[in-house]
Length: 229
Image (cartoon, rainbow, N blue to C red; front, side, top):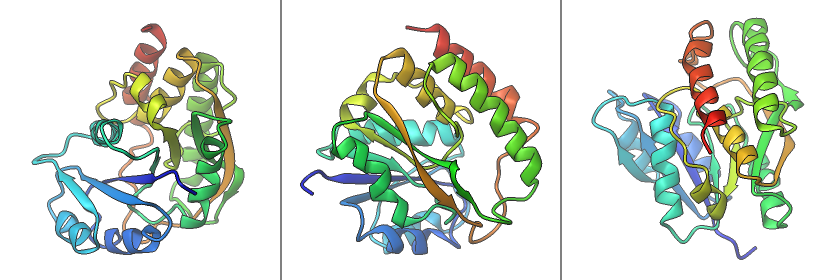
């Protein structure tokens, strides 16, 4: 494989897992970029010690801003493919190459690792039923807006070509960035597909996604992504 893969890891107060995540995937990707979203712990220090390049925000700006900063770096780099990889240890390194393969084979521009055509491990998240319900709603709306066959619009494992990343014109600041990616891909006529992945229990702590508040942040982002050219 000659193409170079950049793992982009948004992280906020993930000092307990960040080293393990980086060391676990470093033999699978060509480079690792951590976006420390204003952590108050040792996330930046530990990420650097593990060998990743790190961009550190002085204050928390949200996952959307962190991912957009990662894509800005990617578009101006010599990497061929980026893959978003969460810092909490819930995604597996074994799923990185299968998620990138459709891009490597030139059959897709954007690939989402779907937990719902794959496997969602028991106890992977608290409030499981509520989260699945909210994901189903946002996925249905994303599918309608994008006209793409998404089954998991909130997946944190997303691969993209550099050309695709340069076309999406992302605006999300906090939540809604994953749905925006898919909607913008549909608007821009990019080739999209999904691959099955396994979603595991996070290594430490709990998710910071507030399930009941999420729609109020995500849906305005989705609507704006759908309206603009």
